[in-house]
Length: 173
Image (cartoon, rainbow, N blue to C red; front, side, top):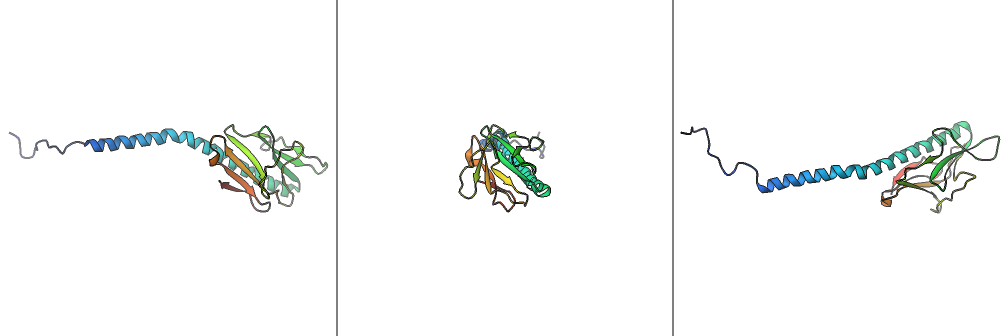
């Protein structure tokens, strides 16, 4: 004989089909997010790292020009390398810097760079003899906009810009 504390099984025990489907859908969404995050997130992360690297180097170069009372420069060549330049006081010809962290640097294959003038938004052409952007000894800079563009998704680009007097800013497009 069953005691009064034991209850007979009822139809309300267990999960309904709807509840099980909701759990399966939630697990599927979480798996999808987890699997797709590294693909989209890694490109964004690389782009942010390169933008930060360039922004820091621009700031360092601007300070270096002021402290050393020299002119420095920046350019992008036709192969995709960006280069840093110095105009030595004893000569009137620009020289490419080779010491770290100012040695020529090739951006990752997933990113492109485009340098343009702020005044007319025209691309600045590469010149093998001199820089496109100059950091002057009086803390001024040639006004520029440097676009960092992902190869596969051009809408996710960002750029670094200055009007020549203010600090270099990072802007998302």
